Length: 202
Image (cartoon, rainbow, N blue to C red):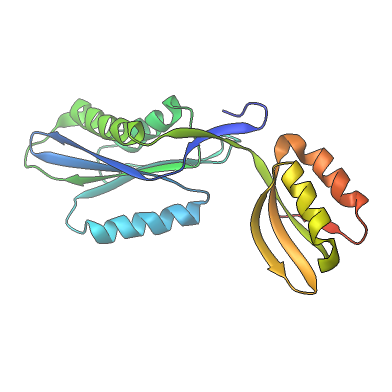
């Protein structure tokens, strides 16, 4: 999944619908950074579709391959969450979640039918949102005197760091994402600056 400090993901939400014998499957794909962020999105979709019989989901977060979950939400085991996660993985993307909302159509679809419905609706939702390459970043907090603002910003710009948050008073704080493959150079340059402290975030 991770090559030279890059990973593939989606940056905008999308949805798609699949119907089979009266049952309606609406797949929602969206970018996520944390499990908490995913839970909030899931709650919103449950509020939006209170009459749906199932809200199945799958997500993968991070680049180490360990942070993923899938749920059949009451469907027969292995018929929803796993095929959905399979579609995320077959596209080689991460920091992505998919929720499929099912409305019951009165006819049993059977295990193969369910697997096909959850797999297809997920694939359709992922097809309509562009996949982009992003750099793997590690989060650091940098503290410095406001007079050094320009020097610090120059280093961050030079190494293509992302500014995640900043507080600018007499003493400034910037939370930044440093590209994994430029980490040593960036930290070295920041250490060269007087009265600048950096610390890694958990």
